[in-house]
Image (cartoon, rainbow, N blue to C red):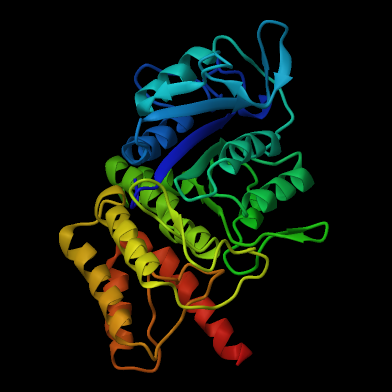
Length: 368
């Protein structure tokens, strides 16, 4: 929980035929008692961390793109435990056990549709727009999205709700569409509709498997790196939703500020309220020091950067559609600029984010 806001995680697993027959060793879903498959590796790395941020550790888990009993029609929201009325699994272990068991019950099929499970989570989030809950959908998939247009519309709709979407690419497929969903600079658009914020984070599992295979990193540290990259944008996405709704989290649900809820129609640049700023720093540092696996010294470097920002009211780089709001800060045209860059470089899990920040700053400079 973050300042009274419960995080609710949902898992969706690609069960389409492109993954291969689960009974064959070449399949991405093949289960070996001694060697976990790629889906299991990804779930274990991420869910064992995020389950601690879900207050009841009950995680709904679904498969999509498979034919399911009893009539074996294609489903895109099949509960892994087979119970449509109660799709919840207890913790990471429960999800992985339900996943292993369902492989014997379902038949891989297709197509690959993301929109149904995204809208499933959005329907849950509609009733909790007061900030009391924030929903995170973890999608594991092996490639191309077949409902591309509808998927974009579903993501745009979800951007106005307390929802974030994490996509992990499994195998060696083409993930171009996932990269397009993960818009870190330009907001997603489709059919005249535009997302109000970036809610998608995409990572490829093969990058981390290569690091373990070539000896660059151990298997354990490759999993840590995966979890860091998967979760790095979540605190800023949560805070951006809160800012746009003019909410401040509280112990018994978030409260609206006197200005009321924002329409969230046009991203802008503004300084947050003190309570929102403090909550963001507390939430982000919590992820940095525990979920992201940073040591005490590294977390302190990040906290120092925040404190410098608090003192320097003249240097404001609050870009609502980027990741540089309240989590990582780049103070320009001061001697402390290089100091903060050095500190951030030491935060191994945030290297990718720092590169994006610098790119975004350069775009702003050129625009000026």
